Length: 107
Image (cartoon, rainbow, N blue to C red; front, top):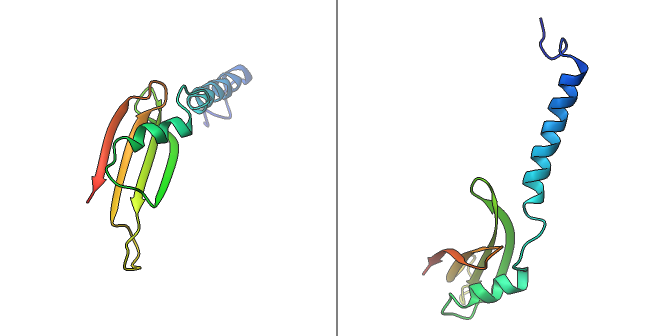
């Protein structure tokens, strides 16, 4: 006996509707943020004490229920031409309030 094949049509519709609602909730979590990319970079830049060669900004989710968080990474490239970085700092910023959640630094 296969419970999925033996399910009624309303039960299948209910399951599909539930999946759509969950995906919409988690997907829509990042749609509207109070802090845009440029503002997040400006806030994060105040946390570093060097001039970066490059910057990366990504919007993601964190926690449950998920909240939108900007992850801003600054780094300098090695002057001797090697791969990698000399310095790197990542700053996590709440995309709704602009509050700094965490800072990670490598030399």
